[in-house]
Amino acid sequence: MKKNKKSRSIWALLARYYLLFTGLLALLFLGLFLVWDQYLGLLLSAPDPQGLTGSPAFLRGEYGSVDTLRYLGAKGGFAVYDGSGTWLYTSTDALPLLDEGELACVPLYASGEYVRLTGFTSPQGEQRWLLTRESYDEDQHPRTQVAVLDDSFRLLEGAVTPVKEQYTSRELDYLTNQWSEEYELGRMETVGGQGQPLTLIFLLPKYFDYQAAAQKAGRVWLLAIPLYFGVALAFILLLNRHFRQPLARLDQAIRKLGAGEAVSAASCGGPAEIEALGRSFDAMAARLAQSQAETRRLEEQRIQMLTDISHDLKTPITVIAGYADAIRDGKISPEELSRYLETISRKAKGLSGLIQQFYQYSQTQHPDFRLERVRVDLCEYLREYLADKYGELDLAGFALEVEIPESRPYPVRLDPFQLGRALDNLISNALRHNPPGTLLRVTLSPGEEGARLLLEDNGRGIPPQLRQDLFTPFAVGDQSRSSGGSGLGLAITLKILQAHGWAIRLLPREEGQGTAFEIQIPPSL
Image (cartoon, rainbow, N blue to C red; front, side, top):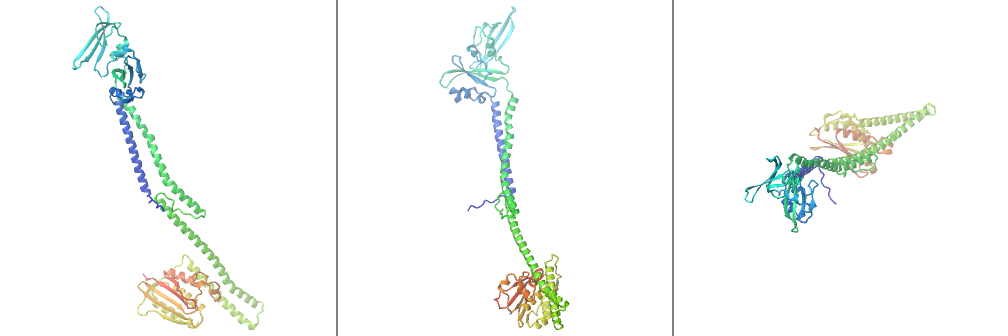
């Protein structure tokens, strides 16, 4: 069999999930931060046309697969022309389609060249344009080219690369990077993956908008909202599984218990506190079942008691009523009258004794039953009690032997009246069920751990079938009542001794070897 894993407490479970939840959120936000940082860095990074021309996709001629954002930024773009100036590919509609002359006018990327076009009026009053190109030679010495154009952009004198007899307005716009207020163009001569010459035109923003880049990258943080709620929902479902299922099992057990079905909630699972609640529920259900069984037993006992009381009262009342009716109706002769009256008196006394027994038993069952304890010497109390009983025992033909220590007292707290009633019941029981000549022995044995009081006789003994329920009211049944008893004497004795904190038991004896009752008396405080 598999051993159940040790259940965690609710505190440990909540702490575990809180730490996991916090840790996972921290990892998610760290991941978002890294994505945001990389994306922002990409948006803020300088263009890298060289990297673009060396990328695998570009070398394979798969220009649409080139990561433009990585190499040219968010607003960048590029176009590819072959060696003859034929257009091959454009990554963005913002790039104009250029002819061969216009291609030559686009400045080389990162060449450090600066071209400007300035208008002026000639001495003759004609519109002229001064085209100036400033660059650096291989030794980083500044070099300037100057050309003068007429109002139709026809070359009049000087020369500026690329040298043309006449420029178009578009060519001059590309040459001076005035074709757009937002973008500028750059040209790069390279070769493709097959060694073919290619011309690349790059579209790059003139001015970098750092705020726009930060705002664009900041959109990554919008993912934090669904990620947070997703993680929170996952942990809520996990906690729900840990608590709802065992609580549902416990609820089902409670419903079954209410329906009177046998239940067990100890294996409801879940946190340790819920499992402990399940075990407590099982213990409560077991106690409830025992209580219900005890209630049924007491109810059966009560019904039996009422039946027995009715039986015990009915017989003497019937005899008294019958004899009284016979005397009243004059059916009794004067010679028989004395015998009838004696029978009525005897039955009335027996009836009074039964009622007294019922009253005594009801007293011991009442919640307000209390003892009036006083501190006495048990040895002296027993000697006085037995001295008072000696005459009754002698008249009944019983012998009495007493073994009570003379040398030292044994102080206890007891109710003299109630204890005398309990001892009366034991002795009366012996007188009622044994023939004359029976020996009654009373022995008190004090010790450090308490005293032992033994009341025994050498009479007939108690039948085996009556021993188990001897202290139960009416347990002796008809055998007791036929000999004049109510069947309540030993039950009253048990209640009185229990109220003292003492214990009584019937010692085992063979049938016909007499009866012995042992009373255990704990040390007195």
